[in-house]
Image 1 (tube, rainbow, N blue to C red):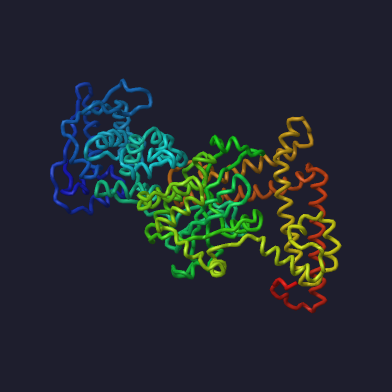
Image 2 (spheres, one colour; image 1 turned 30 degrees about the vertical axis):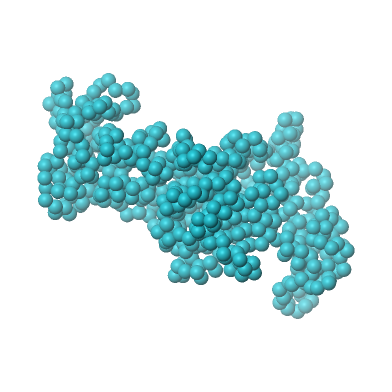
Length: 630
């Protein structure tokens, strides 16, 4: 048996080599030298078993990168045993490798044209490589399981309040090739080196780890062609957009730290941390003009998925809510914070190179498909999760002291380290015009109210006083409004509806459990629809749940199946949500029902009045609304 001088071009029986490996071997032209051989203890083996054992060991050795193979102690002895525990294929004991004897019999029974996809072939080679990985990891040439960078990539993350210590739980539990990798870092290294050497898709499914191992060993086996772009599930996309987004990192011009300003609510006082992806429209060269393509921009946001009808502060403190990475359209995020929560947004560019952006997106995609963290209000909130994403995705940032348990604290540290360019906010008007800040809708609502107040002589001075009126008391004024005032009042009535629906949702969260406990049958239908909605949202918040098999980033065939299933489930979710809205309103207190019904009437009245006034004006364009002086 021989191998190339660099170790990258082994020679062995070509009929058992996969086509991609055969092509690789035939392309090798380097001079050959004798490959090291493991010592085989064959005293208890039959001649066929001994021959199979030698064949397995030689083929496994020829898969190893040369730096790994050449560093092995030639005195290492391999024994094939019958006394290993169930489901254990191998063990390392000092300088001895203990392997399951049954693997030999399965190897002998293979068909003559068996390749790497044959179960017996894969099992035997994986067992040998796995144990040799442990030998390498424990040697001075290895120590991979103690390398901070490997631990970052693997999922044993640094805790913000642990003085550099690692979290004990690896939360990257989804889309795993073998859950045994989660036992500890040593097993993670061994399992992943199996796939690094035996799976040509490994570079596509776990690209960052593939690059890490290739850099460590100085070589890598050939890889398959990867599906284009990075896949993201976006169940909140508009109905005319596909729920599966395939994003080419080359289209991302910049990454901004997107900071939602705080308010008086305890859970929101320190703001919310997110990342904004400035995505260029197709065909546009990557550059500053990509900031104009707002419809393409996406937001990466860690959120606690609440799979119950009642939010518990205690559960948020103790980590009972899952923390997952959501991918959302920028427009939706802006509307949610500025119009519903009335909180401003700051979009502050991070100084990252194009390569760092690509690596950060790659890490975010792995988090999106594999991470199932636990939300904790203090120690694992949105700021901590965003910091960990930056820390693990951009190695340069791991050396900066950025950890913070508050979103505004993380922003200060990013700015102090020269990573966040807060100068874009120095000119408030320019920041609004260029999209570095999105103002809360309060000011706009007040401006629209001023238009209506000047036209109608409304007695209220502020928009909050107007919105606080019962809807039926606003109705008489709506009937008298001119074209401009009607347009302004329509916007305000829509704001009143959003506010009222938010209050109604909070009320339902409290009412449904209480009525269920009291045995009221009337809540049964609403409860069932609510549970169906929550289950569907839970399914769609965990993208890996839509894929029954495979590991890492989904590839072409998986994406096709995923797109179809995601489309079906998001359609089902919209149907259930509409049914819930129909039945839930009847369960609200009469006063809340009356307010919602009155707002519906006001919106219908304004819509009809605008159409009538537009016809009477001869179809003239409505000029942009501007507040008029008192």
